[in-house]
Length: 278
Image (cartoon, rainbow, N blue to C red; front, side, top):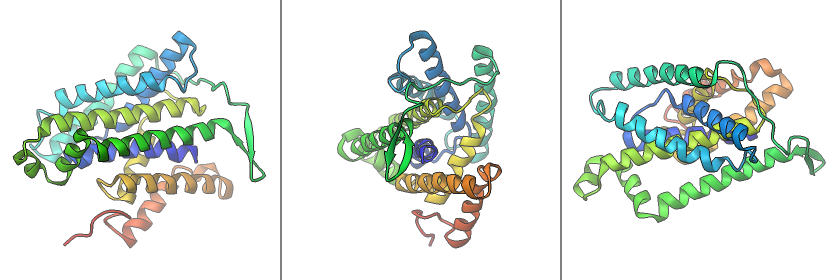
């Protein structure tokens, strides 16, 4: 289930960016990787509880996201999907190599202070870290929901997502909404990176591709641009991965996302929450 929470945050950020900008960022998994290294660096320097370091990784990744949107995607927005694809693929190699230069390319791991603590729920022993990860994910998603529904900026982002030209006619600065959506999407990826680290999983500069592929699968399963779809899709994938590990072995863990993806596309090509075509 904790893996599903990480996928939900990653896919929600990806969907937020696509919903507002209609841009598919293939380097989104590398933002998770940067978030993992930011957490690792602050943990080594400060020794703080790694969960507290969400307060560092999210703002830093928001700034990284805003910078990427300004320098890379803004100049080519609307010039064709092929340009967007090549920009994002180029970013994958740039971010991976920059991370390797800064932190090295060896595998890293840090340990949560609660890794040896479990609680019994319904006869099952559940690691405290899993419960904290689930709770943290819920808090972040509720905060995102309140922002999108209850604030003027959030409503402007939703308006831009629904009708970009109409939003411009109503006086909304859609370029600002693009910057904001990309920054928040990157911040969610940074949060996913922090939770990846505190869950005890190893990481290196090249680990972002598999989480990104799974996030794309979740987005397609849930429906392009649908944040509820990303949440449901992430839960489905997390549960399915655990089921696969216990039934057919860990070798099927990464394949299960694509089995579910194929089934959903056959049954409902627009995704579970996607709008039906004309």
